[in-house]
Length: 134
Image (cartoon, rainbow, N blue to C red; front, top):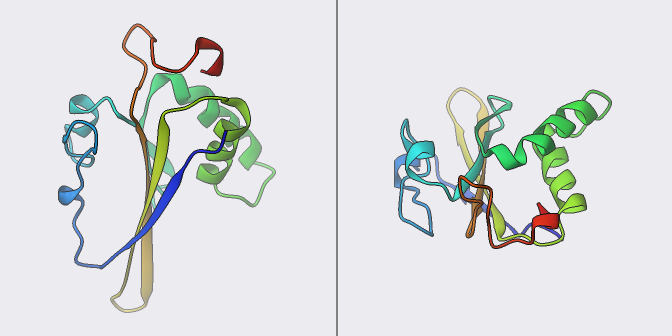
């Protein structure tokens, strides 16, 4: 199963406050975003090199990506997505790849990878995906 990905280039004037979950309408970014929206299952900012949000059921993929990244030139997020693609047969997950580019004193860019699950596991671990797929 390959996670669908939408790659979107945003202007430098774009602000993260304007991005909302397409499922429930909660803000994707911000101090309360993880607490108010269960559909955002991961948020990875390339400039920080770490996950700001990560649902517990995806932690094993993050851990494996960090292990593999030690011997790979590929970014952790690419390995993470690759591991999910290899191991999950059914998913309601898709990824937004949002890139902001600009020029201040030199060209710069920042990319946020936002994983949105239309049917995420509940607190009890249940989801629309078959159990063996998780």
